[in-house]
Image: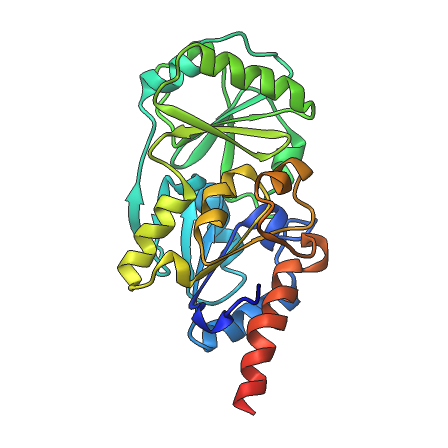
Length: 278
């Protein structure tokens, strides 16, 4: 079936594994194409699991107005950086989720407003920030009094260990939480009211657009609702096969290492509009 790209007015992209290359940066080629799309009047939204302070440092390199949906929808910031929406997990909810037997090799992180509290130093997680704007704080969770957080994050190279932890937390009765694997090595728990899709709908309502007028790019299970509800949903070639299998109706494009998002946008939106103009 042929896609009618003339109906697309909004571009939405995840960051890690999607807009960012393997060095966790936005390439010059991607910057150029997003600048052209902005100049042509497209609304641009970045929707990421990253904390807003971390994501903003990356988006500043694009030098165009962008709406930011961060922490999987727990925060929304306008292009001028004004906070439009925020949601935190209550301390008791987080404490209950962490009150299970957690393998000491698993990195545990609480996303706070101005720092992230973690049980261990994880250089791989640190490498995701090319500039350390969102600082880690090493803590002993057994000594904490306030567990209030934007979201709960677990990381380990063994996916099966994270699956076991996820099942353990759910079995204990975490009724107010839902989970997502942003990567096979990254498990995240958020409030059930928090999702990229719901946050994006808030932005589109404010700007007078619908989800059917949006094109979205993603590579992980925290992108599932976003990709399945937009007019055009596109899966990165580097996404896990298990994720591709869940959305077989969607098109798979190039990888983040090859500027897959920018390549697709250039072919179907930038170059096409330039041809029409000429």
